[in-house]
Image (cartoon, rainbow, N blue to C red; front, side):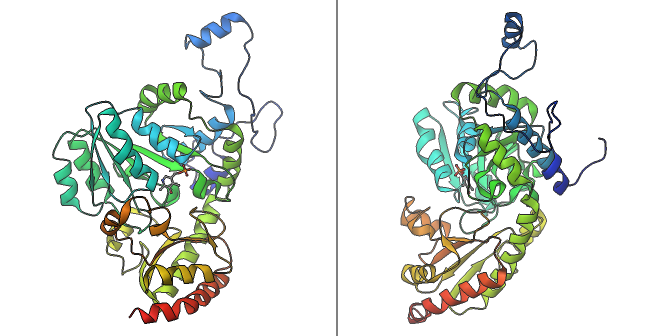
Length: 400
Ligand SMILES: *Cc1c(COP(=O)(O)O)cnc(C)c1O
């Protein structure tokens, strides 16, 4: 095939490898190992003289299909899958970093990513500095010293702040750093960091790619040389491999990724507009809205505003809890990117452990609620939100 296929087509057909049985669907190769025709073939395999499957900790045909599909979608040369998104973040950093290295990261990171940078790297003699993602002067100051790696997330969890990818990548490269972008919130459909200067992209496949709350998974994408020389020896020998069953679930999940993300995003736009008109809502955050302080950057860097909306309920934690508890359709859960809509209260869950001081720096108010918009009828979601805001109104209005 020489024609360039579009994302929706790649999501259904990319990477498909049929066996001699010519099955329609991808096969879940639930096998830990593989057998050799003779001893010499085993020897040649271990000498890297022939390229074949050996052991599912190294590679597996079902994983290879998903890896190729994600490469085609992202425009990446190579991909390795991991058991979870956090295994992907961990492996992308620890496979490369060594004692004496310096890391610069955006402050607004997923909780466990923040923990790796703040609490784990120091044990290996790797120093770090956090910067405000939107502050280019801050990035320039931090990157005025030699740096091995930059880790960032854009839009960030939970307040949907953006980082200017090309600008930060240029500063990072001048400092000698590789740029790792956690692209979970955008999905590969709405933002392609590798085309905007990033060197490595990581995903939690648990989120939109499975998208139906079933399995955990992670992915790391980059150029072939880095994946083969740096990452592969690390994952082969430390063992964060994804289960072939989970890879198969995610392969089938991504077939509908574009349909789901498009529908969820349409609803997210309508919900953000609805919330902005409600007196109980102090602030709405959605990257494509004119009241987002970085709307221009969002329009430049993303092809859509995404499937998440954050809001601040007037009246702080009590009002936010009243609002969440009154929802009858939307679930309370810290997950996101699911076909079921979910709300979470970051200050008391995902961002509890970082402390009040760090939360204040990230703009995570006590009334902040993150909404992951799902696939339900948007009219039912808006009715649910309206009912819950009515319930929170006495607390919200008392706070005025
Ligand atoms: C969920 C998530 C992760 C971690 O992924 P797991 O699959 O839960 O390990 C990392 N980064 C972001 C932005 C996430 O949303």
